Each structure stands twice: as C-alpha cells, then as structure tokens.
Length: 179
View 1 (tube, helix red, strand yellow):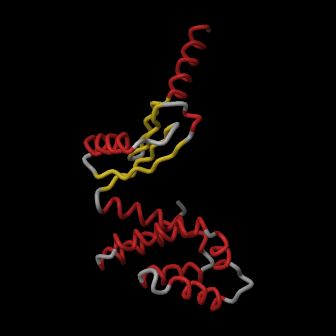
View 2 (view 1 turned 90 degrees about the vertical axis):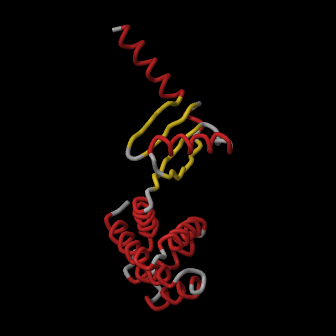
View 3 (view 1 turned 60 degrees about the vertical axis):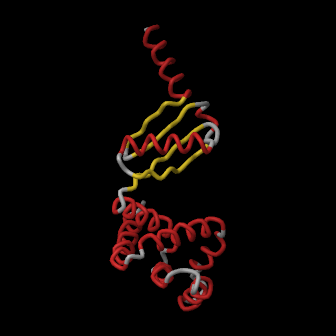
C-alpha cells in the first residue's frame, strides 16, 4: 500500500464512517476494484492524458453515476483530477484496513495447494476466530508449489505448515548433521 493510498483511503473511510456509510462504501470499492482489474482499458481511459480533464471526468461520471454512492463517484473523480487512478487499489486496501480495525475484523491470507472445501473453510475460519477473538475474513490463494498443508498470514504473523516448508526443514537438518 502506498502513502498516497493510505492518506486518501483513510480520508474516505473517515468521511463514510461519520455518515454510517462505511460498510456500503466498502462493498462498492471492492466491486470497483474487481471491475478495474477486469477492465484495464477503462482505467487506461481514465488516465489517458491526451483527453482533457473534463472529458476524463465526464467518462467517470457517465459510467458510475447512479451505480455508486456519490462519495465514491466523487472519490474517483478526485483520483482522475490528480492523475492517480492507478492508486485506486491502494486506496481501497487502506479503506478496507481501516474498516477492519473499526469493526474488529482480522484479515487472514491462506495459501494451500488445492482449493479449500466449504467444510475446511468454515472450520479454519471458526478456529481462527476462536484464537483471535475477532471476526476473520479469509483471502484464499491456491499455489500447487506448496505441495500440501497451509500457509497462513494473520495479524502480521506468518504460520507455515506446508509440506514444502517441512521438507526444507528436513533438508537443512540433514545438511547440518552432515557438517
């Protein structure tokens, strides 16, 4: 997350939290983040400096007016005016972080070799919530190179219980015994 993203995301969160709109706006920011990822041409259009500022603002307005809360629309327009639409994901991340802190939600990144089943996901989420005393939001990644097990990042700590990590530990132990 960039300093720009933190500053602007925090500012938007403070405004929305005061108005009781923080949850609604979080959902819209996450939706826009996905949209921008899926439609990079739209983002490039909003950043295209061969178009005038008013043209770029008009494009944002035409595409988003009535689709998102006016605070979100105005936020996008501020990014367009500052030539900082590329910072949107960082701003949304900062907003999500502030929302999580305000609502006692922990973000957990879980990496496994294969996708978790619904049953595994529920059990893991329940266990993490019991451990932390917080509501936990899981962000899942599938990476076959972990071979098996779980790599978990939660509250700034990394827990590596993957087969790949255990094999690495065994290799190091064997190498140190050989010396």
